[in-house]
Length: 429
Image (cartoon, rainbow, N blue to C red; front, top):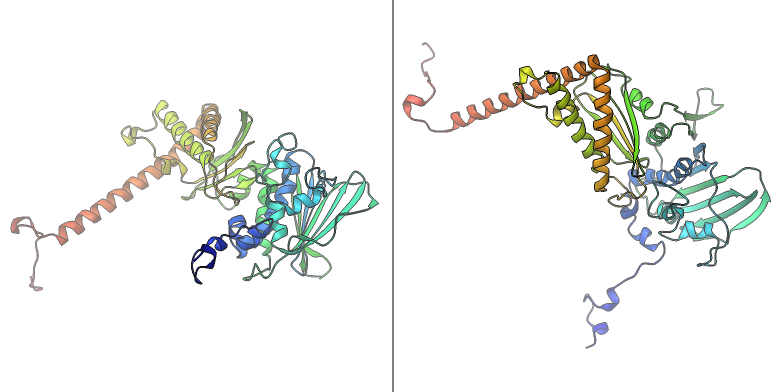
């Protein structure tokens, strides 16, 4: 019997399937957007907005507008250069259609187009197209208006060019596919708002607007809206995060570029006991950290220990050094790095893997924080005092745990008579 004529249920050559085009995205969407639940749904907006932010980082975009329409479709509008619309020499179709329908296609692979970008794999907007019931894109470029529509990633018709306009930019409107996002296709305003606020903090000078046409004000005359614009950048970010806390000092900020990697860090200690350290790579929130966070924590711990030892502030610790947990207590910090060739783990980019970034961040933090502490001795002593309190509390908690464990061991073990705890059975005595 030949291999292709084996009984039903057997594993044969005919079982080997090759997914082409956007079919792979539709078949396994979680690989590209994390999940098909609310998190993945909101990731669609993030992928489109990231393209506009990349234009802003390149210096070509100043305003980004996100509109959630009544039918839960979303429009993302920017004033960047606009997606190229000329004929693509390899595919013999418009470059706009290539970007929207081909995986691993885009301008992010050329460093002449984007020095740094959040979009690296060339799959972002094409993934959104594949997972949308419908997507419309309008490009204002070279004084002309170019439009194209898609249904579940397939072009309805070729790109059309008509009319003239004196502005530039790209507008993408998409309707999430309910067959894929079966749990919900309703966007949460606060979730979208949080991400857009982050992007405005990370890109000072860029204005980002959010409009929700599903909600109106009390008078019912205007749609719910928010606008984000921060000249202070990540310093404003730290101040925003600490607005309900009592800061020990004003935010510390330092920035440096080394080997084409730009590092921006702002930090501030407060009177709380928890840490709030947020890290970003090319504006992407790396929830799981990575080498940039490791470099930051290593340098922070070493710098504070060095300063404390130099100024003899560790007397009551008998020379013991601070641990990483000690120096992180009460700290709010933003770590933002711009890397030309970041190595992320997966398309959702939650962890950075570039080994060289750790050393660069370590160097920047050591230099910047060391200078700050030397120039501000009073603030330096306040920070060390905060770390000392954390260290004492941790030592006390450790000793209490050890005492409890020792007592439990003694109670549960059988000891010789003269070593066992005394006991009395007569309640009258």
